[in-house]
Length: 441
Image (tube, rainbow, N blue to C red):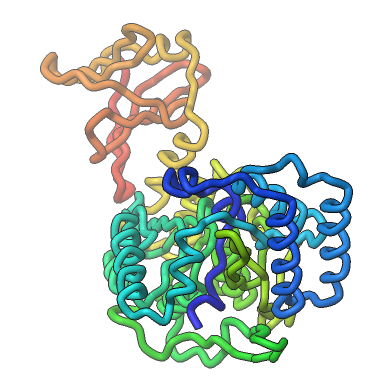
């Protein structure tokens, strides 16, 4: 049941309307408003995961109606937004959302028509292709650290090939950063598919869940790691997941589950706290509602993060999460590979400088000026330059107070050497640990 595991951030439900929807708007009457409210509460009684909260929700909506709080809201989209806000206020469940979308509701009523369904699926596939099935970036950072950013969890029935090819591109990295800071959820099956790349032969379910079907029939399920995925697995690679306060739903579930399995390090901010699966139900007059109709339990904690969010292992501001996780990955790998010729500590100053740009006073830069054999360091226009043999001139980019990167060259770096507060020379430092000293004349 694809709809069971489709978890969508509430903003999509409230404000994401097309121009076509707006053109089809009509002025609501009090009668049509009451029809929508009555239908909505009936769907809650049938499916909402928290039956004890239904009475309070019904009371709130009907009281608002009787008090005339909806009376002057005649535009469908405004009424949908107001109902959404009221549902969330009473239930504290962020997955609730009412939408005005007459085209969608009409198509749902025709869902037995194979031609209509074929058209809908074709449109959904075309839209998903334009978004590259959610996968926005896959690249290799300094130190052979993989970086993957995707903004929603597509159904692997159509997105698994793109997901698999992305994972294969990153399969030879020594650590992997997964950026879910702007990910608002989607199909949990994609979380299952991706998580399976990080294990080999693990016999443990990722999720346990139940949901209500018609007549409040309770159905229980488990979702396990997949025994087979296309291409190479990354079971021995350190995984870092980046989160923010807008990381939501299926993105939270992947983070939470892998954190409890002690497979990942989460870096960033506490997540939004929306754990319930939803289903979209038809209401009268072109309206629909996202109803949380299921509950997921982590098999280790036997609980979830609804209303609480997922707490990172390393707390930092969202905008600092990439550099923070990159540093963590480099430092951990550097400790693991102390005898390696490829000195990972070489990249640490670059990432630290990216996190907080080094600033050196002009007076200090001027003190570095001078002749060093065939090399001259010269201060010009508030910058320090490296001049070799009166031929090549390169900008020196400060990484630390006395450490510089040569613009366009990464074979070596320049480290100023001082004794008794006086510059005596500089070292050329190479990635393999070799050094060469140049005395100041």
